[in-house]
Length: 101
Image (cartoon, rainbow, N blue to C red; front, side, top):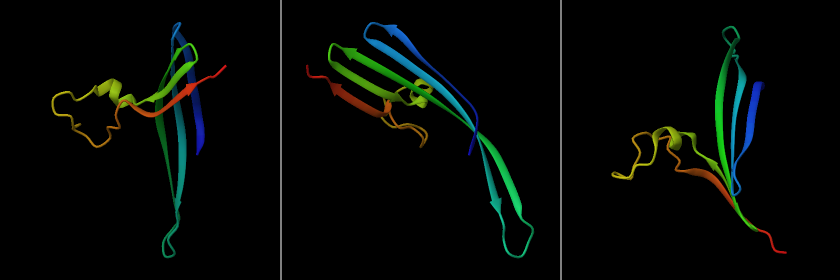
């Protein structure tokens, strides 16, 4: 994979909240070479978006990677189940940190 571009921002929203967002566009090249026919080369580009939030109160910190589908589709309050198979919940990774003095 070769990156076309990577763009990101880390924004201060409030004294206790930071937001992060980023976009990566990558180019992938695949070669298919069967023994009896000519070699074929395939290429494609893929764009991924990233969202994150950091919350901190004193020595306690929470950092999460937010699922972009949650932001565009929202939660499923009534059924509890999504209509598509890609739904991963609010956050795919969460870390908790408490700094002891």
